[in-house]
Length: 165
Image (cartoon, rainbow, N blue to C red; front, side, top):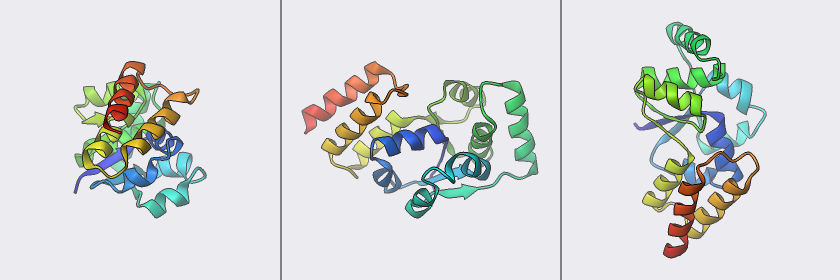
């Protein structure tokens, strides 16, 4: 089973773009650590995410200790994000994040890591959503004031979607 462990930022971006349903129809399992769900998602679309199939997974005591150590080493990442990293690392799962500090730590720890644009490429590859909807979704995400996606990569995809539509 291919499992993608997401941080909150990826799920928020996908929701902004209206792409959650399509993402949860991909041939993968989407998961978050229990602490991340409790602190960041339960009151923000929590029920909807669970209904779509989001799995909530727990760390064992050793994993919790590892997450706390990561948080102490890299103060730029949150404790919920460090839980996501440990869950991905100890289970051999892929991490999804839009956070630069978390990506850097994942690379250092040799954890496969991707972001929103990778998910969009996966949606395109699996043809689970119309190209016009991918275009509209990415456009909504990119035009949000808190968007941190690389402009050049967004432009490449929007141009490609326009040509395919």
